[in-house]
Length: 336
Length: 127
Image (cartoon, rainbow over all chains, first blue to last red; front, side, top):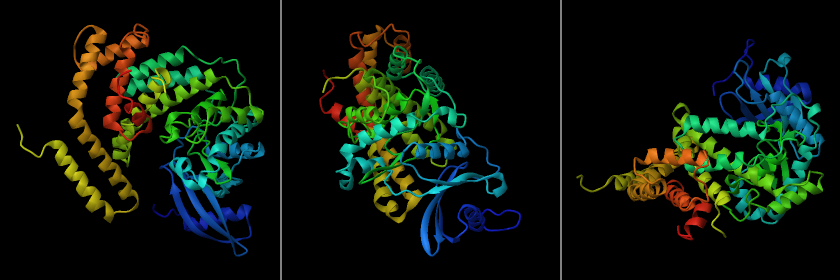
């Protein structure tokens, strides 16, 4: 990317160093400032801060000034959620500093770098995770119970999404972007007939808790990431999403993230203080999860030619049928 | 009619060149995007080969299920409508078999390596 300069013509790494020194005055210099990923509106940077000659790896999540925010929640809210999660005992990167207007450095926050593997494919297959895999579903359950125990009143304002609203939004997107699909129609009808009771107390919902958004080491879950889809809603949604077939990476006999069993997820959840899980409600959210990922695949195809990855996005659209077979396995199983 | 090589064969030849000769010269973003592009060419080649018979079979099943013929897209729209309003359900004879057969035929083109597809295709399309 082109170097960003501000009015006094400091280079981007120098401006970054000036902000880092606000929370870590003893940092001598920054090494290996690398942009990891992100779209046009949000960036993720990796940097090494040298403190007393010792390297400390940090992560910066940032939106440059003047770029319109398209994400559902702001970076400031994301930082607040990670701080709340850490206080609640959820493995989480530590937020060092939230960038303010006085910093003239856009918006975002600095956090600690946490070691761990995020690639779901590796987590379900690599030998180094073989010993921990059978314990990950239970750990995921414990972590979700802690997230759901966070008091929403102590958080910044978050969107409230009920199951019925979510189904209606998905249906509208599907109808707008796709030719009629009989399997999707079957799934929408099935969901509408089985809406979970909405009298449950609304909770903080991570929104994208799955294999791929957790860092895993041979010792277990080292961090929960990606709070961009957090909202207030039915906590069972998080349990259903991590059971959604798309995150199993083809390991079909391990429904929880391709690494574990539903019984272990539920046991960990209940042992750590989570509410008793109704398997029928879990099934509702798992089914919604497959339909949701299917609708998202359709959406990618519709934006393919406007993106810088047109073939990739088009090919994701042709993975919509993966969700159709997953839905058929849920709604019209042919037996084992 | 056109002479050999047929479209699917030409696509396979292009994918072979891109994979074996061009891909090793690339890294990073372009290597990844080229790999995805080769997968897309393979998908199109599978579709060219499989689509005619798959569509014929789908049309035959839909005609039986709905009691009349028509264009495939129209029949799928009609079936979708009947499922949405509850007129056709999983208890309707033939619906489950039809949706399974159609879904498996899609996956055979789209993602034949997908785990659940390999599992389900391994047992055949008959109950």
